[in-house]
Image 1 (tube, one colour):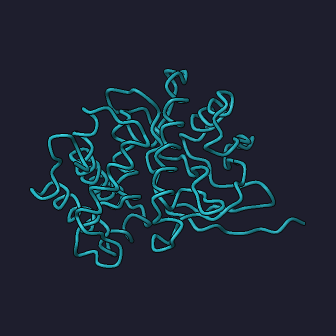
Image 2: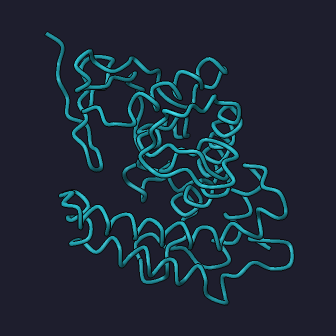
Length: 260
């Protein structure tokens, strides 16, 4: 009998059985499975192979991707410049491969599509949803939050988590402003942001965090225990503090965009 391992997750129980990850299916699981299949058909291996939804619709399965997940931001592999660059390039590959994904009227997404729907966003391409091998990001996992949207909407959140864009009171992980600017520039260059996108990256990150807080509070009010726990632990206050800091005068971009 294959060993069953409960994996560290955010809001759902995720179980590994051999080389397969199993999790409760959701209304959007079939759409996400189809999207993961599209990525592989496009030659993009930045996510797991989809193995489908069970006949009774209760469970979905995807490929287990070996490696180390970046739950610990203090880990050198997560904090390195090389990892920041690799994560930006992975996200660009994902977005480029998703641009011609066939969207259907019956598609279901966990998060509502946002305009302009340039690509399919991962929605939570953070360190804790990134698989590392040999000290570098090689793939993203947990595509539950995938949804059509602007490239920058996704890139801003990945930058928030990988740069990171944490306010100075988050003393364990924050970085000096000049270092933040330097790493934003690294990220923007590696992804290939246009000049216009570079100017919009920081404001979008703040907007993204406020939208996240609204979502968390709505889910908690609807009775979702994981989100209620996150609010009790102060995650919403953390995000709003960071959003205010991102919007503040000393972090506004210079004439050539973030990092100037």
